[in-house]
Amino acid sequence: MSAKLIRHARWTGAVLAGVLVAALVAVGPSTSAATQTNVAWSSYLAGWTDEYIPTSDNDCVAGRDKCLKATLKELARIADGTAEDCSHDAIFARAYLRMTQTYGWSRDIAGYYEDVPFANHQDAVFAKYYTDAYYAYQSGDRASVPEAWRITFDASRDEQVSGTGSLLLGMNAHINRDLPFVLAAVGLVAPDGSSRKPDYDAVEKWLYTATEPLVAEFAARFDPTIDDGSDPFGISNAALFQLVSGWRETAWRNAEALVSAPTPEARDKVAASIEAEATDGAKTLLATQSYVAPLTSPGPRDEWCAAHHDDAPPLAYDFGAAEPYGY
Image (cartoon, rainbow, N blue to C red; front, side, top):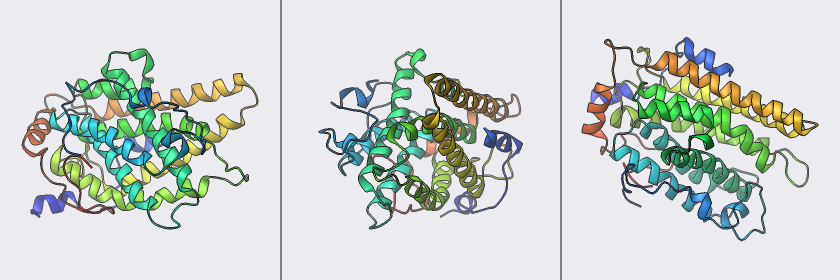
């Protein structure tokens, strides 16, 4: 590994810039992103429902193990197409694929989760919220895309933000906006009345170990500044994990508020608050992570990606060495 990649892979404890503190409150290559069919996978999976139904004929609704393959295939379709085109959507798309691959690794460890079928179902529903938003946007159906996602996808289209900005915008939309609705839809308690929170929190263990190879891969393939904690556009591994962990805790609390709302009107107010906070977070990130001409521009990022998007990830993940494409 070169000295540059070693630098990009370091594990530092540097804190993020003030923007992140503010935001915290709140099987091979596929076709290119430009030519792939913009059809959400959930639209052709018969019997899809966000509710967990173990007896369903739909493998993802029932949480059968084979659902994970379908989820990975769909995420890889987006991740591979955007990487080949050096789209600025590529960073979050690849992050999502790698995290889902790591979930699959953890799922196969006996005792890691109390309820594996439920975890499989929740994983698929969470992915569906992202892929539905992505394909709706690509199809021009902006009305069906939540505002936090519209800001994120517009920023990618217009190449407005750094690699760090691309990652954080996607994370904000998916965790702060989507996740509370996903958790409320799939259920916060098991049939015996016990909380699903222990399995939810178990994810934190592999999120921590996945962060280092994830940031190293992005620095190696898409934007060499993304892990530079001393750069205002960079992010350290430790800071990224802490940010995600904090957002996930807030998402659970927001899901509790959705579920416990006493009336439909009260629930609507909670939902509107979730949407507004995620949108405000996206606007803050857009304002602080945007390139500032003539000092910074997307040119170096695009040139780096053009030369390196096919490179192999430099560090192994928990699930092993990752290929640049596919899963």
